[in-house]
Length: 333
Image (cartoon, rainbow, N blue to C red; front, side, top):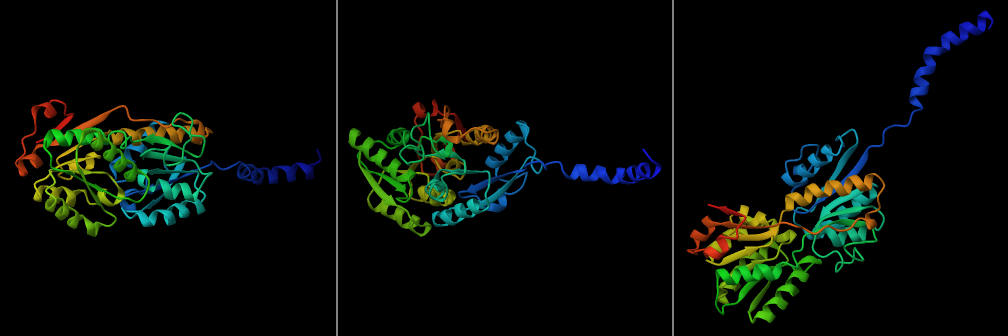
């Protein structure tokens, strides 16, 4: 090598290193779309969200080796209990070209309409097969997977609990939202169970929060003996108010989600929702590693919790039968 060539090589050497480094492919940071149902977006945002359910999901992702900001970030939207907002929010996440979407039951119709290609991990779908996002629970076949909350299948159980609390011929008032897929399926299940057992139901449809007060007035006027609340985005957001109105009306009430009892309600029978969020992280991990959602079976909850609020019982002068207390997983005193 002549002297001039050697000098040129030495002079260019330090500049060549950065050029090689710049040519290396950047780490792929996955974007996970979070479509909240009732919790404000501000409580779902960032690596340490205030919402305990999403926080549990992110902790589980961390345990699986995913570091927020290094391996993934979240794109958050929330309907905040307003069903009419879900179609637009789902479309926004699709336009952002997120790698997958995580959401829960009430938003399912909107997400189904928005995309047939982006993987969707559902947390607590009412009935994935009846709602048209899975050919079967064992082999979904499309872009949806996740967990089924089995609210429809356990509706009869909640009715039976109500009749233990308030036996007699008085009708059971049922609060439900006729929109979407989940609540109508649960209402039909309630009708079927009541018909088989000779019980009377009073249908109280709630499409807007402004109808909740009048629904309880209608229940009182019809001399209802108890209230069954079918979870929905509109009603879940008003859990505290519904619990107060049930107490004011002196009606025993059973709910499909624990959050109503935490808000002051009497009794709930529901799956362990926190565990369902933790399990969602496993679905996310498999999909990011290349699994197709259509090949991942929908999971059904294996643990159900019966939670009783004795303070709420005392408020309406109700003595909880020992047969129910003995079966309770948790008693709030």
